[in-house]
Length: 156
Image (cartoon, rainbow, N blue to C red; front, side, top):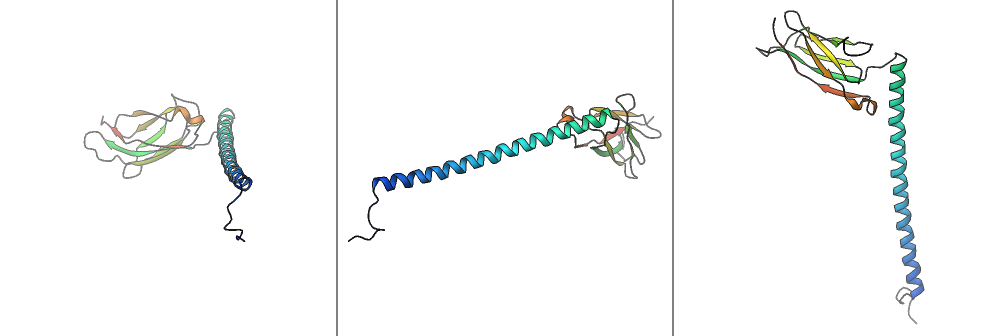
């Protein structure tokens, strides 16, 4: 008599084992597809919620500053830093609220402002002011972001 583990499998046994492996593989594929679909729907809801919150805050005049603009203000001729330069939202280019920041003694600044496209104004005593375009058109999709601008002002 031949032991069971050495006996060749019958056609039905091979067929059922093969079907079992196919069902397991198909189940894993469906589970993976479900997880990917669930994550995509979650990301879409999160994104749309952020866009709606930002739009509602703008309508209610309670917009939160979520766009970070940083850089250094320098002299265009000498490239020396300009300390205490004023960096602010340009009132002629957008809606309130307007945000303001001052550069430090090394000319470095960090302005937290609204993510929508608008201009900022950079000014310092003894220098011609300069306006700079910031923000992105896709602010509704990604209402947070970072920009870096090194600004050079020309002396009066």
